Length: 171
Image (cartoon, rainbow, N blue to C red; front, side):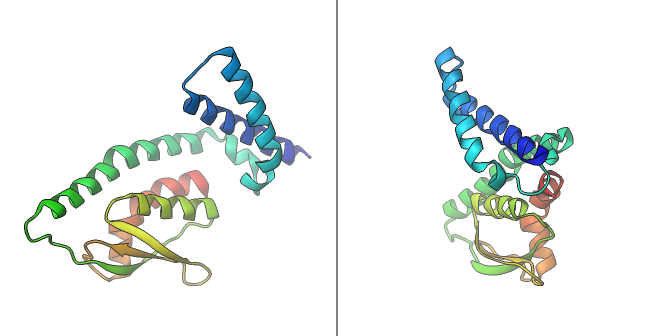
């Protein structure tokens, strides 16, 4: 019972914060509407969103790593990837060597695997086309400029930095 209550509270707080950020308003009407909508959604989704240990959702260290990841992703990884693709597009010979490579992963949680896959896909020049689970544990990534087909090298170039932060958040 305590687990369900903690799951509800964690989901409610997350939804409410997201609502406040998205609404960009602090009027009484918006706050009340956000509280009601967050409570209704949390009732239906809390046991789905927070599967095993709801105490993880209140861990300050995990949230700190999530903030670091957010800033790393949007201020470093995205900018570097965009610049790389822009150079390729504007280059007269358009130097690309596209291909699909296997990239191993070490994350255990579904949220972590999904977050890394989305990060890879949202970064220009790479798209995750498949995820194999079980023994193999690999992403299949379409890469605009294949530098190597060695799985370890692909991991180091494509997903190592994403996993470094997201493992601390989700696993």
